[in-house]
Length: 79
Ligand SMILES: [Zn+2]
Image 1 (tube, helix red, strand yellow):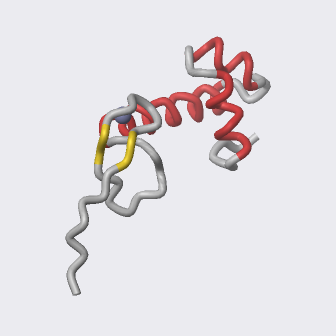
Image 2: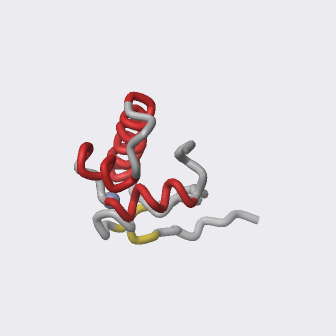
């Protein structure tokens, strides 16, 4: 049996339709790349400034405060 159904989803970042291809993350490849880059930047900022809180990191990197909080909640950032 073949599953030839075209699976599409709306990107949570830009709203574009894309094929999720089994990935749990709700982002198109473009946004995913950007997202990974932001995550890396935040991680590096935390490493360089261990005393910074999420709000200060958000101000320093220009990355959304709520996104940083989500990452902390998901355990992507070590505190
Ligand atoms: Zn997108």
